[in-house]
Image (cartoon, rainbow over all chains, first blue to last red; front, side, top):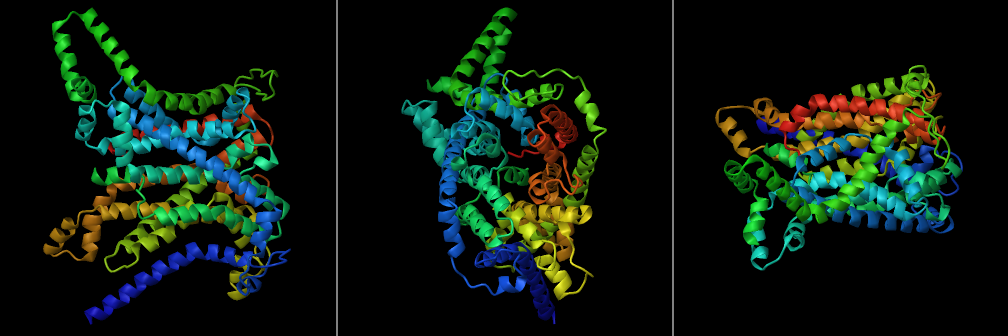
Length: 279
Length: 331
């Protein structure tokens, strides 16, 4: 009797969980099915969507004719450089806060923390004027400056905690060899924080890969557009051709999803949760 | 070299050294040595710190101050053009602008509606996934987290597509054609409250995975020994949940709720990509209004004034929570 009710509850729990999965996954499936429709010039009816035959025609059209390969490469370049830059700068300043004593350290860190609470949209106009004064409007350099410069705070906050958990005794081997702070940083702190750095890298990459508002204000040239902007413009022009719009959308989200699925086992739950659990 | 470095690294040693000097030497000299020491420390940390500091100063801190200044100006972005001072005119204007009223109301409503639902669904699914007999825990976690990593724009397209007007939209198809729950297909995005409903659903669907993942991590951090001890004392499943799980999750719950409130308060792409603030600005929220005023209407001063008011509100909200946050080590 006991076993039977146990089994019943197990089935109920599984059913709820699978229902949850359906809610989260179904829109994606519906989107993928829609991309298989050809000549969808008005809103396709659900019956048509469910009977669509898999084919890659729309993807080919979007990729070649509408030049999404170009926007894809643009985004890859923008997000790639921004990711490497944020990682380097973020880990350097996290190391500074984790392992150095200097006057006003906590004051500066508090100021950093404070800025994290202010929404980015308030800063866009002044950021634009800075880039404008530097003569970097419509260049990727301008975009990188904002992404990397504006992102240091977050990555410093995230990485400082990890660096502080690394035992100081490890530094001695380098010191005995006569190495300085840089060697300690490169040979001890960076290699030992690989999981945290990897998580950081994913955040930085997907954050800039999807970034729309800053890119919209800085980049003017059509050929230099990144994927999010290209997508919005494309949707504006082909509002009713959902098959094409979603083919382009899938091209835009697939890299991030693949990266996430590959790395998610090593994913560090953004540090703060760990600290909180222990405390 | 070795000793020197260790001294700098260890605050304890550092403190002792400073104290020793303080006792022996006259005041003036002591101040000079500690100043010198500070300078020396800055010299060491400088190469690691400076680029990040510069970046933050130029692209975070300066823009914030500049924003405050702009809010008192009729700001023009053209080089060489005048930006006359207008006092508090931009602020006064907000209180006569019906769009601002909608924006405040909708930002507030979004927080009140989505935070409790988001929190409940998050902890509910996390507890279910964490149950002992559940297999494929990581698969469930990954699938629930999928909306989070998907681009806002793409998900917004999806929601506009699913909630399309007429009987071809999928939601209308289910509710009207299949189930017959409604008398006619709903034009979801053309009416204020149905549009708000879509925005809320969108917000919850897109962000609930984060709550699930954080609570899952927290649940896995609850020591198994606590459950065993309670079980030996004769506790049943419900008792375990009430007297072990819930108290152990209390600190993380504060963190989660604060983050959910901030996330809901900062709602922006949800509105910008779904309705653009329409119909008639009725679904506008603070951030979408700030963006539209600046980049559609070119009212930079007015946009900044709304921004400053929003920033102040967030500042006060977080300041009152500062003590609670400060006690937790979140990094």
